[in-house]
Length: 123
Image 1 (cartoon, one colour):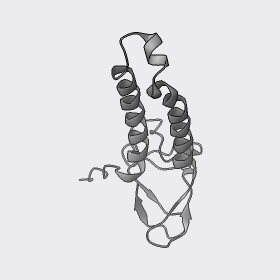
Image 2: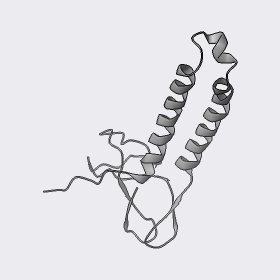
Image 3: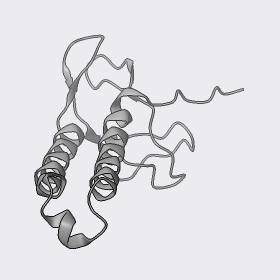
Image 4: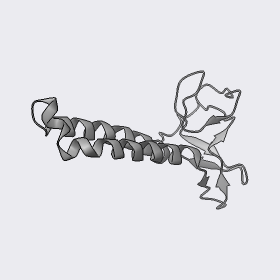
């Protein structure tokens, strides 16, 4: 009987953290301001919305595209490759980011393999 794949914690946590922090910041900014939009425009929260979302977008692109180090051999592992899904046992068919869902079963990848030492790496 095949074991279920490990839940991804570290790699995908970064994306969930960015999304949730952006939503909470927006809700906090709206709720902490006055009842009218004209009052909200003059608050500090409104002035911080633009820079916050720009930084969030930049961090998302950085976390997604830059490679990470293999904990076994210390070499960099690319985050874009034609990866094999452990849930449906199918290849993606094209170069995709490790943070993307499987095109067949829509599951998120929890582990990957190092291109250099061929050992399994938890994302």
